[in-house]
Length: 280
Image (cartoon, rainbow, N blue to C red; front, side):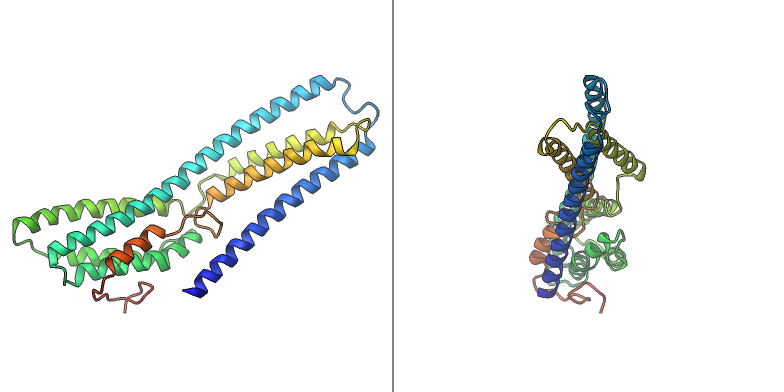
C-alpha cells in the first residue's frame, strides 16, 4: 500500500511538473517572438489602422473564448458524470451488502464474498485500468459470479421476497454507476475540437505578435502577450485535465467512495479472492 501511495504521489508530481513546463515554454516562446517582431517592426508598425487591427483581434479572441468556454463546460460535465457514477456504484454495493444479509444471512459467504471481491477489484484493478482507457476483466468476472450466485437463491418468506426484488434495483444502479464512470475512461473531447482550439490559440498569439510596435517599451509589449498566452495555455491544460479524469493529477477522481464501502462490507466474511480482488 505504501509503495502504491508513493508511486501515485510521484505520478502527480511529474504531471504537475510537466504542466508547469508546458506553461513556461509557451509563455517564454510567445514573449520572445513578440520582442523579436518588435525589433523588426517598421515605424509605426505593420498596421496602418491600429483601431481596425485591434477590432479584428477582439473578434478572434471572442470566438476563441466562446469555444473554449463551451469545451470546458462539456469536459466538466463528463468529469462530474464520472465522479457521480463512482459514488452511485459504491452506495449501491453497500445496499447490496445489506440485502445479502436478508437473503443468505449475515454469516453467508456467496453473495457477501462476491461483493467484497468486486469492490476490491474495482479499487485495485479497474481504476488503474481506466487510467489506460480500459476496463477490468476481473470486475466483470465478479459481476458474472454474483449473477450466478443470486440465481441459486430461492426466497422462503415475505421478507426475503422483498429483498429479492430490491436486489434487482440495486444491481441496476450499480451497473449504471459503473457504466457512467467507465464511459469517461476514454477521452471525450473529440480531436477536431482540439484542432480548432489549437488554431484559435495560435491565431490569437500570432496576431498579437504581428501587432508589435517598436515605439513602446519591451516590457509594455511583453506583458500583454505573456498574460494572454498564460491564460490560454492554462485553460487548455484544464480541458486536458477534465478530459482525463483518472490520470495522476492532483484532483483526479479516485475510488475514495468504494474504499469507504469496502471498509463497511469487508467485515470478516470469507472472500474467494486476494486483496486485489483476483480470484484464488
